[in-house]
Amino acid sequence: MNELKMNGQEESPTLKRKRVIKMGKDSGELKEYQPLLKDFKEPAQQIKVPSKSLLLAVWAAGIGGTFQCGYNTSIINAPTKAVQSFINQTWTERYNTEISTQVLTLLWSTIVSIFTLGGLVGASVGGTLAIRFGRKGTLLFNNTFALLAAFFMGLSYPSSTFELLIVGRFLTGVNAGIAICVQPMYIGEIAPRALRGAMAMGTSIFITGGILTGQVIGLNELLGKEEYWPILLSTVCIPAIMQLLTLPWFPESPRYLLIDRGDDVACKKALMWFHGPDKYHGEKEDIERERVSAGGIKPKKPWELFTDTSLRWQLLTLVVIHMSQQLNGINAIYFYADYVFTQAGIPAAKIPYATVGTGACECITALTCGLLIESLGRRALIIGGYFLMSVCCVCFTIALTFQESSPWVPYLSMMCVFAFILSFGLGPGGVTNILTTELFTQTNRPAAYMIGGSINWIAFFFIGMIFPFIVNGLKQYCFLVFLVVCCLVATYIFFVVPETKNKTFLEIQSEFQSRKKLIAANGTEGPLLSTPI
Image 1: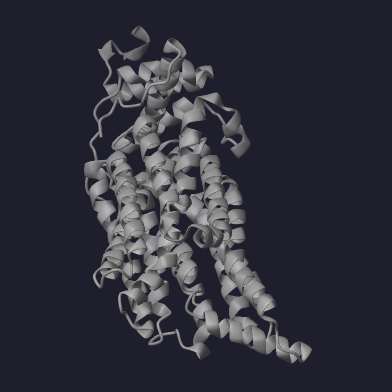
Image 2: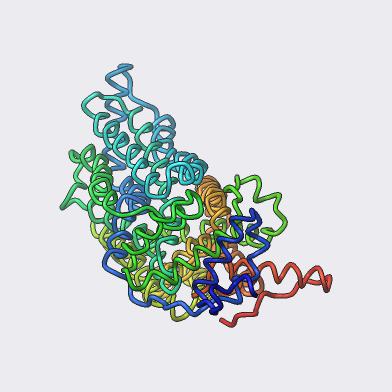
């Protein structure tokens, strides 16, 4: 310990930590000095109330980020008949014959589903862009796709070119894929440890907010009339412009600046901006420890994560939670919603307003999850969410089976619709992206988001392709399939995934490493339950 004294006086823990880091840099062997850092750790002041700057940064990142994903998912539903009429008219003018029903259906399905393909492309490149241009830089660059999409879709009607709608929808998909990959990364890295879950819920809040906004804008009282559809589809430029005007005023991710770029001065300025000059020190020390742990390792590529045995459980968890987010039945609920509302006696003209109610329900639950996640933890919410969804699957199957047996059963079906959406929003809808941020350290996180995002979009496309066949074959009993999925995922998370609330990324990684050592020592696999729910 003589090396760690200066002028015969014992240094403070903070000064010791800085000297150890400097010694590691000078010797070129940072990892050799990492164990010493634990001895000099002093309790950091936890930030329990987000600063105004942090909240505004989350808003600026979200409005042009995952808000666009939700908005473009829902906005295409309102102009269905109007766009099909435009395609038919354009086809007739070109070829002097009416378009066949099969070709019209194919073109419309392409316009809708090409969004998913664009999302897959965006998710596949989002992590790479985040490493090259930074988290903030990638979000700003991503608005280019939204602006081009608005231009092409707005131009399709005056130019009588329905192919531009396909191009525009593909570009909106690319925009959504990049956003859902990079925005959670940015928010998760700028948020303090004690508020990371609540701030990261901004991702789900903006997705559900986008869905709700698209549903409201698509009402006949606003832009839902047939003649307004080109304007409706062009409104995707508004969130992009708002982000271009606001996000440049906020700093880059401090973790990216220090760990990826090695810019200590810029990192310090960014932390002071987000957390204040008196409260940033604890976060700075967490980032320093993670930089020492990284030891100059470059960000990994997606295929390198699959070959890294130390990340086996994190990667398996990533695949499970992202695949199940699409295969848990939430799409089936929305598919059956119109039928349930009709059976409950709601007039056809009023069903769009009931659909808006489902969007509002999901948005409210995302906000509620943001308030509960730091008190209840991630495990309680996601396991509880899947458990409640399982119960709803059973109740909804029974209600649909006896739909016409009694006048009150359709109302039970309506209750099941809203209960399922509430359960999804409180659990997997809100927690999945947070876990993706927390299960991986800085060098692995971009690749993890690329893998998770790609799996999500592939599963989205897969369920869109096979879901009609599942419904036609199993009818209401399709929810028994989703019941099995929900139960299996809840069980997996209970036995494998530790609580990540209020832990550093290195502490979370350490919990998974301890599981690997336990398996190697005992030859058996035990649940990761070192932290209670």
